[in-house]
Image (cartoon, rainbow, N blue to C red; front, side, top):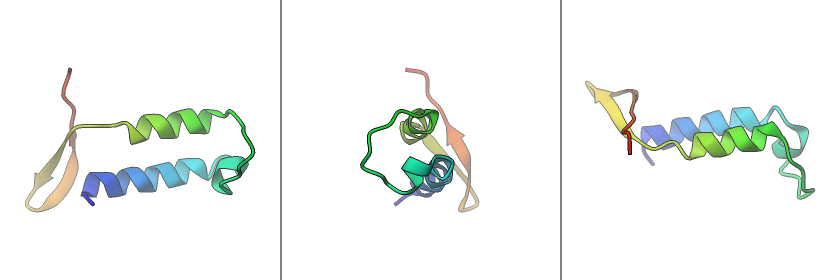
Amino acid sequence: MSELEIKKLNIVSMIKGLCAHCSTNSSRPHNCPVQQISARVQAIRGVPLIVNSEFKGILFSRV
C-alpha cells in the first residue's frame, strides 16, 4: 500500500469518527456530511511527490 493510500485511510477514519453512525459502522441507513467528505477524500487521485524517500504531498493532474 502506498504512502498516499495510508494517509487517505487515516484521514477517512478520523473523519468518520465525527459521526456516531459512521464510527460504529452501523448498518442503519443515514445521510450525513461525513459520508460525502470521506467519499471525496477516497476519490483523490494524483502522483505522489517523494523527495529523498519521504512523502511530501501529491501532484494533481487536470483531466
